Amino acid sequence: MSAQIPIAVRDRVSERAKQALDTVAKFVEEDCIPADAVFEAQIGTGEQRWNSHPAILEDLKKKARSLGLWNMFLPKGHYKESPGFTNLEYGLMAEWLGRSRVASEACNCAAPDTGNMEVLAKYGNEAQKAKWLKPLMEGEIRSAFLMTEPQVASSDARNIEMKIEKDGDHYVLNGQKWWSSGAGDPRCKVYIVMGKSDPNNADPYRQQSVIIVPADAPGITIHRMLSVYGFDDAPHGHGHITFKNVRVPAANLVLGEGRGFEIIQGRLGPGRIHHAMRTIGAAERALEWMLARINDPRKTTFGKQLREHGVILEWVARSRMEIDAARLIVLNAAIKMDEQGPKAALKEIAQAKVLVPSTALTVIDRAIQAFGGAGVSQDTPLANSWAGIRTLRLADGPDEVHLNQMGRNENKRGKEVADKIARQKAKTEELFKQYGVTRQELGGNIQATRYGKN
Image (cartoon, rainbow, N blue to C red; front, side, top):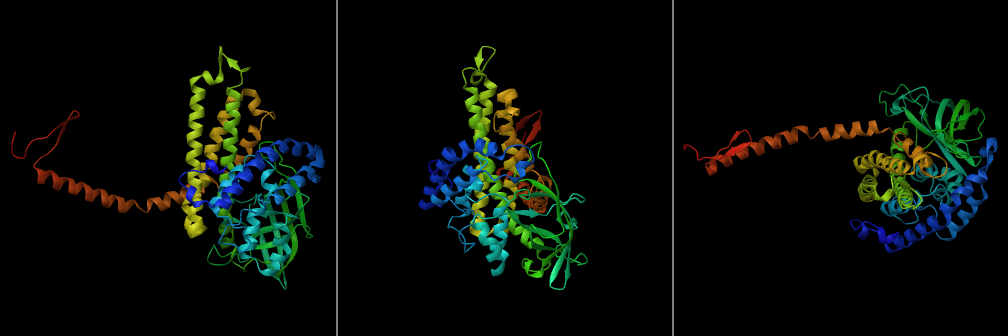
């Protein structure tokens, strides 16, 4: 809540945003977290899970809208559809949303809809916005984002093979996609699809395009839903989908042929920040569960409560420090995005994308360890949280891709810093001469004597 905003960024948060943050926190703590288990129960079991639309979610949406908690993610100054919050302000709200399974969707701030809405708001034409963005922003439909493919190494998006071929006033799509998150939901009505429209272009970054595909277009087959460490994430799901001669009006192309990389980079930057801040929230909740466990008087080992074991208190202390440090990394990236745009903040976004999931997994794992067998079961939210966040080390580009890019960029300073160190060493030698001293290192002893004297 607003009283907990880090002092380093507090003066950047408006009074309106502080009030909204307090409202979000109260809504999540008092309404959404208690509703998580009910949502799961209403989904049910078996195949019906993929046709479920829990009533409690619609009730939460109505309450969220009545509280003014709707579409908070579109950043101020970048979208005319924005509700008026900055990336920094929404980031603080997203942290609270990340504590609950249902909270993000209840506020119409759930992935992949957020990223898809940003694509349509930033790059879509007026007709595309009217047909797809408006119902998404109203929460009337949901969407999926289709980029990754099973037969290629999709961590290098240049490898994508989905064919997007022009045929008169249509494009024809052929290929397959997987990890199509959101495709399992019966309310999913539209896919944002990336494929190759010009595979022979000499510029490998101009071969791809992005196109809007109705989910019920003929020729689309959903073969299965992929599980995440055994969790199916119904009814949201992660689909393995094939396209066979799927015809889409040419008017559905976003921005223009060959603009796919540009669009996707614009989409993924803010999305990574949203993921990171929700993940901070999940880590905070895991720490709370750990604190509850280690203070449970029924749980004693070797004659002591868990909190009385030094290693447990070290886990708590390290978790507190790591969460707080990770949060500042994310908020720093959000500020740079607000001031200079996502493209200028690529380094800071990558830092958050890599650091935060790893930090959260460490915290959640400690909490699981404190709970013992219960920690890996369905009796706490920890196992599900760990599984979901583990995927973030792969989603939106695996850690290694970001680390490699950051390493290359940082290494560009190599010659500059080597020259600086050489200059500093030369200056040191000049100072030794100026002050008439020298140094001799004899077994760790440093002796200083005047030049020319014993």
